[in-house]
Image 1 (cartoon, each protein chain N blue to C red):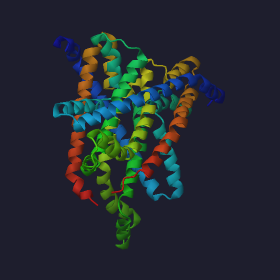
Image 2 (image 1 turned 90 degrees about the vertical axis):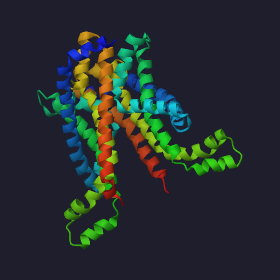
Image 3 (image 1 turned 135 degrees about the vertical axis):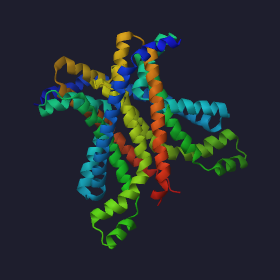
Amino acid sequence: MFYWPAFFEAFPALLPGLMVTIELTVLVMPCALIVALSLALARLYAPRPAARMATGWVEFWRTTPLLLQLYWLYYVMPSETGILLPGFATVAFGLVCNVSAFLSENFRAGIASIRPGQRHAGLALGMSERQAFFRVVMPQAWSRVMPETASMWVELFKETSLVSTLAVADVTYHALALRTENYRTLEVLTALALSYLVLAYPQAKFCDWLYRRHRVRE
Amino acid sequence: MFDAFAIVRANLAFLASALLVTIELNVASIALALVLGAVMGIGRVYGGRWVDRGLGFVIDVVRSIPILVIMVWVFFGLPLLLGLTNFPAFLAGVLALGVHSGAYIAEIVRGGLGSVRAGQMHAALALGMSWRQAVGRIILPQAAIRMMPPLNTRIVRNIKDSVLASTIAVQELFWAANLLEGETAKPFPIYTTLMVFYFIMIVTIARVLDRVYVAVAARGAA
């Protein structure tokens, strides 16, 4: 039933796709972190209309399905705005918007959880607003948001699989293509699942460890 | 401008029938996820060391594989493994979503049960309750309320993930939208309507679930 040679042969065929998956994750995450921090700061410190807009933006990306967002960007954006990006850039942009929305919510909560007295103390010591934020508030908030940020990374790694539906040649795309070539569906898809598992499992365990280590004790 | 959306208006009945499939898919998969999650979560807390480890491994495996991959594996791979023919896509969608969400819910249940202080269990046993009664009447009701916020998040997530069933040709809302787009080549009105619809639906459901939690939250206070 299960044809082992087809299973083992699938891995080398999936490797180029795996590189694209990793590339996409590595490219999207830093961008998402920067966007997320800007959004969180806008929601906390910007004048009300700007803060409201940032909140609306975040809520939109958090409450609609990622696949629909990617389809919208891929099919609607070029036809309506004339902006025609390559498929890879389109999905990378969509993932940055989606992931940064979730991250910004996490950052906002983390920054808000640091008592205002911390900032006041920084200011009283003669720090500028910027110094008080980056030297006093941020380092404390960071240890609270880090575990959640790490799980978002794992989440992103898995979510990149959706780009396969838009012909971006990630590992899932390669597997689905290979399946239609050699008809070894069970072996190829199992190899695909195992590829994700081997890469994501240690990361997930690392996240669990981070959660234990940075548990908030009040 | 608004004529662009005529294509959506003309196909409302078709989209409504697909929405029904989306609802059925979510109700069935969330029900399965809750059962699986409760069984695995309770097993991890009370099943002893080896059950805890075994279930922990299974849960971590499921959580490490993308839902899309689980879905295509269940739909295309599982029937080959079991020698089944004519495996219905809807069933595959329910199984994949149910197992995926179930693994996350198991961790929520485990956390919720763990948050009820040990004294509660001791007191129940001291009053002469059996273990089953103590868990069912004392621990679970308290834990259930504390589990609600993360459970609500997971339910919303399940609804968002359910659009992936379109990739295995479950005839749900996103599948119907893609079909319509393929026939008419009008992505703007179709996907925009769908986006707005999902936004309103999910925000509404999230609000309702949150209200329910707020109404009962005091009963779960430690």
